[in-house]
Image 1 (tube, rainbow, N blue to C red):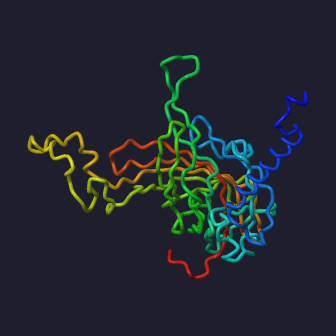
Image 2: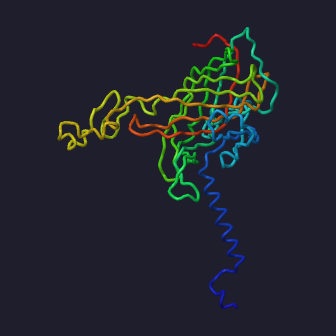
Image 3: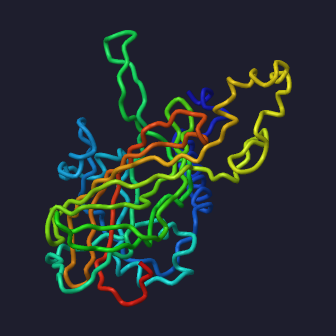
Length: 342
């Protein structure tokens, strides 16, 4: 048997060599990870939450808040951060860590937030962090050849860590139907792109512009639900020019790169009308939220959300797709301090 092993290291030495090589590759890969600050915030395990979407529509989504987020996202659960963690960090400690793209969560449920009718209140630091991105697509029915049905399919996020909405604020008033939150400003939109399983990429403008959300209870606490409609502007503005120099408010009004289609006096470009006639489209979206933790002392609350909106239409030339987002939300109730411009 000795001659069979001539010129080859023993098996144990081969195993050791493979182990050393693997460890070396892991160490080399870790060198390309962003360096975390020396004084990292104390992180805790993310609280169990739900963003389950019901088959009969978005309106029942918040009522199903009983399933943990990891089960919905199908991804490894990320550690959560508390408001105290964020407030204790400097700019250099946050830079390069991805924490600026995160929404904090209330640590422990500590009482309900009462709203005094004699005072004026607002919601500040409102934050929405998606954890799951789905697009409605036609998929084949199992066992039924040639038949299709529309379902929301999972996608791959192509956008870097700039997809979270934060710093949003607005009025909190008591109306005839209870508490009403009206969004007034902040980082309330984030251009994002996802990729479908087949490779097609779908851009959309994640936003809550002009959101008017109604609360289900006269105060705010665990079990409170809120939701409403918002307006989704066009993914691109009128100054955008496509590869042929066409735009909404500037640029050419025809496909100058295809002069052959103009030989009949212009009617030949009818088939390109949607591409040439750029329009700024505004569509409606809806969002449902469920609060699972509040802090009566600080006025902070956190929970989960499910949002449905339409994707980009390429300024009117493409049919939009339905986008379903699920994630966590955070906000803080505060009294007016005189700095408001609304």
